[in-house]
Amino acid sequence: MDVSSPAGFWIRLGASIIDAILLFFVLGFISLALYGQFTTEGYSFTDFLDLLYHLLLPIFWYGYTIGKRAVDIRIARVDGEKVGLGTMLLRNIVGGIVYIITLGIGVIVSAFMVGLREDKRSIHDFIAGTYVTYDPPEEENN
Image (cartoon, rainbow, N blue to C red):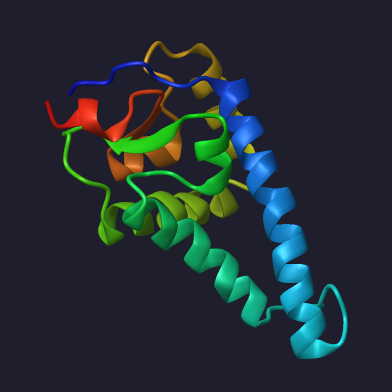
């Protein structure tokens, strides 16, 4: 296991906030065009687009989302392989299920893990075999 230059809690939170703001406006305008209102109640097509953003963009963009790219961090696998669909499904879907089953306690534990562990890995990172790093993709393959 080789975890180099791990990203800590505050930078990861900042990237998540950037993604959330971006998606709020982009998906809000898509929702406005489709449903005639900026936000919708219940699940809608825009929720599916949000899921696709978090699942697929890191696969095609070397572990980056727009928020992560803005703060120069990315998702990487601990074994050095490229982040794939299985990895992102484990990280987002299975990790999310764990957080729901624990009624949010897992989220709090994960925040402490990212803040206090030397490798800065959270519960969903352990599930998927990932970590968040400052290293660019080129350094991962050397």
